Image 1 (cartoon, helix red, strand yellow):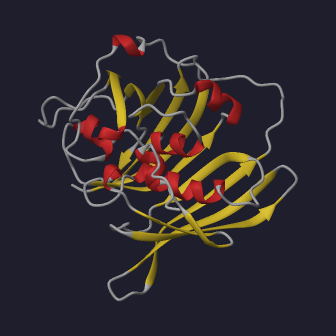
Image 2 (image 1 turned 30 degrees about the vertical axis):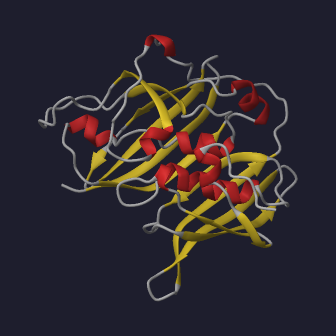
Length: 277
């Protein structure tokens, strides 16, 4: 029997076939293509999917750190997920994504560490409440943000801090806020949340109104939501907020937070990004 085609572009992009214990094969897909390779968020989601599909996984994702070591090219790839330490409530994973080069030699393109954990009900609180912003219905959807495929995979409704209207070198703050969800709408899960965590355009473009070349070096996502909260969030919008803290000597950082419409914090995330004059 021929397997059915996944109904959502993200499910198609995350389709991994197990070929050995902890080893999966997949391939890049056009809907999540960026300028010269796959969108970094879908690469992060793919690495996490390797852990999520592993039969030895303990608990749900707590943190994901992705190091973009080299370019991911069009075509097939292999994901390897290895549990390097399992404790009573946490599990530590090492994950790689590799591809064959022009000479047929396998090369690692991206590495990741993942921590999964068994969550227990405890005292909980927040130091970062969701900002007071207009509702998604009161914000206009934008189209054609970038001339790349992956942008069409998200419904974005900016609130503040859009791309500069003019690339004139004028200086602005780096804050951006927007409502976002998968397009077409899709029930939220951990892999999708990892992908959305990378949805922001480069902070330096906002800060300087200058379109310089950039590339994410490393991204970490901290998952504050468990599976029950993700199920409660469903296919609703997420409020995504990002800002930079420092631009220096060819690198800048990015701090971001994502809440659901009920104001519940889902993830916080950090990036370090290369830029070129």
